[in-house]
Length: 258
Ligand code: FPP
Image 1 (tube, rainbow, N blue to C red):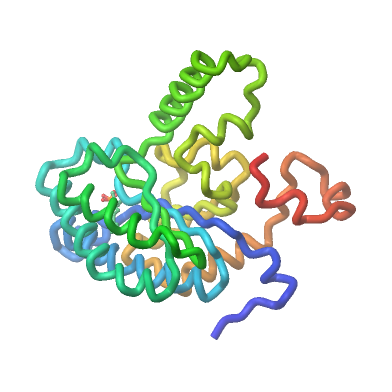
Image 2: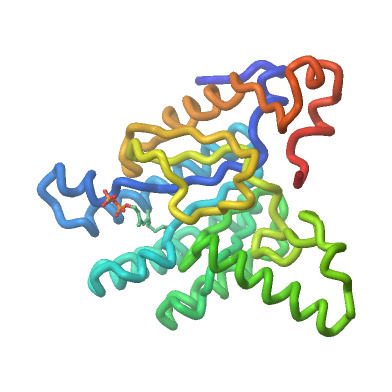
């Protein structure tokens, strides 16, 4: 049983976002079709969400389907959507019991009707939960999200006469789909790839990035703990010097939408 000291616990991230990569390679290495990897990847979601609760990480965001994933073969896409549906049907009762609020970011209208429906229903049914937060990025792409934010802000200018120069990051971030979430402190990517793949590009400005060599279906509780340990060993300076940090309150600096 791994525990963190009180001092370490204070440094744990509030928001961990995960790029779940490597399902296809995991399946191929076992001589199985890609969907077998995705199926085992979904099984893993529960254990990582449980580990997040165990270590008091209130926000988890998972990159489940990118806008670019729309270019995958139809049978893989529909298989993924069926897995998403099964996952939400199976997990709803425990999300309600455990106080987990589900959110989604991305263009849900680009999902098949049945998937859109179950996602929206699950969001609605869990909207009063406030202990834990699970956000699924579905048909999500950061550039599109930013463009949508700019459109929304521009409409505001036209209707309210707001002055464009008054736009600062805080105001703009309210036009992003993540407006109800703190910025991610830690982004984990599995499968040894060092890139963000159009995921939370602006929100990740000060995120620490951890790359695990494991494919997503193998990324278990222990791997999650390893990522947390690695994270708490880092010094997050947010552009300041180490000396400045040791003289200021870490709570003033961290978890703020800088
Ligand atoms: C990346 O592996 C994974 C995806 C594109 C989909 C991730 C989706 C799931 C784990 C299932 C749905 C999620 C939920 C929360 C129900 P890849 O196919 O790109 O792997 P590869 O790079 O090895 O080919």
